Length: 197
Image 1: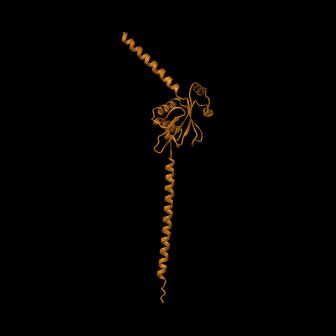
Image 2: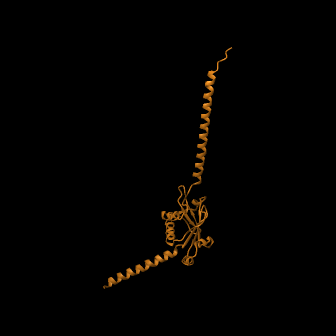
């Protein structure tokens, strides 16, 4: 084998080693468990698929940054992220995720579902808020987390339109009833003989 061939083989081996090492580091960097709770959820949702959690974190990290003012008065769900070797062992030892307490989380945040034209967002207690990409939205949706909620202004508009519609129907019914009553009274007046002096 020539010197160049050995050098190429060495480079391929080193590249493979580096890639496999980096993949292990990336996997270890993602939260092992993610708890979503509060809001309209009747019970916490636990994401326990490590690869799925990493995919969700990538969908957030790749999303556009969002200014904090966009989060004002939006509905949200609480997030609790459980990372590190303790939580890896916790899952590997077969411990129940039902026993998780959000207070034990290593990091916290909020998931803001899409509202009207506003995109879904994840904001961590430390760091910036980011839009959640389509892959992340699909992961949350698959686990039963509401990813779209109705805008309060749309709900109010729908209510107002409903009230106006009912009012118009009632007014139309009243008008029809009044016209019918007038039509009944008018022929009776014609039938009566007129009293002339």
